Amino acid sequence: MFLTFFTELRAAKVPVSLKEYLSLLEALDQDLADKSVEEFYYLSRACLVKDERHFDKFDQVFAHVFKGLESMGQAFGQEEIPEEWLRKLAERYLTEEEKQQIEAMGWDKLWENLKKRLEEQKSRHQGGNKWIGTAGTSPYGAYGYNPEGIRIGQDKNRNFRAVKVWDKREFKDFDDSVELGVRNMRIALRRLRRFARTGSAEELDLDETIHETAHKGYLDVRLRPERRNAVKVLLFLDVGGSMDWHIQAAEELFSAARLEFKHFEHFYFHNCVYEHLWKENRRRFDEKIPTLDVIRTYPSDYRVVFVGDASMSPYEITHPGGSVEHWNEEAGGVWIRRILDHFPKAVWLNPVPEGHWKYTQSITLMRQLFSERMHPLNLEGIDHAMRELVR
Image 1 (cartoon, rainbow, N blue to C red):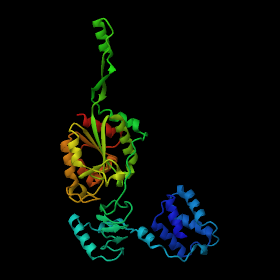
Image 2 (cartoon, rainbow, N blue to C red):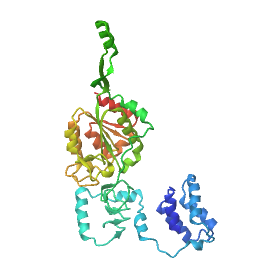
Image 3 (cartoon, rainbow, N blue to C red):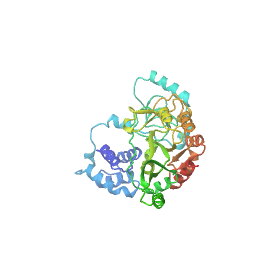
Image 4 (cartoon, helix red, strand yellow):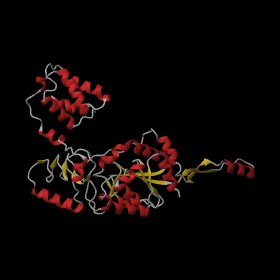
């Protein structure tokens, strides 16, 4: 019953941690609730709820889980805690001092040791600092901590320290019908305009019609091609991982760009561009587009806009095999340079506040690759980026 209480609080978006849950169990072990349901209510609320904004959700979950309970003795069952729950939630809690004492191996040693562990390990392991397992300080596994490791069997980011992920992850396409904020972004994007009259003559040329009519003595209607924005744009969108925090801003820009530019194409990537891109995230493992094909298909007069937080392991940019999801034969930085060599008019829009950039090594590396042509993903940043692209 206590386990159900804990999991339902988390499902209701009450930010309860395992450490707080264990503190509650310890308090119950010392009989601080005096076997009274009312005392248990106040004790559990004090242990598990850190913000009074969550009191209502807590009350609803408490009433649902402990409905009909008359004494605390009824809450104690005989069933053992499921092993799967222990595997997933037995996270390792370390102080900042303890984290600093754990050393990163470095890229080459990390892979060499992983190969040895795979050959030697015969069973599941939990805790410790060597084997592939959970809740430890080993560089391999899940729900523990290491400054540089390979994540295996964990459903999402916790510490944003993994240099590679050994699991298949699914991402969603950005919505190009989002309207909130799109109008202001469209106005900012309009700095990237170069009008030309192209296509068939369908628009009335009033001045020329008047001139020719007066010259010939009869009505001579003159038509001309419509004046359109001739700028062509390629949009490269980072998706998944830490970009999940910036979905709204990315979708607003995506919608604005689709509406503003007639010649427009988009491609997705994760963290850094490598040998493949894709158009649909749900098919990204089956319908990949070679990056070289994109470079060869689109001429160099296209303007290129990258959208991403550039927050990743530096190895993704500097090392072959550094991609968090697959083994790339060439470093991400090599592919970025190829794109920039072909498309000289290129900028990077970053949703991370500009004041935080200097604290992330990968952002610094990406800014250097783009010759400082990285701008924040806000109206002012978009405005500056568009000015950069029309120079």
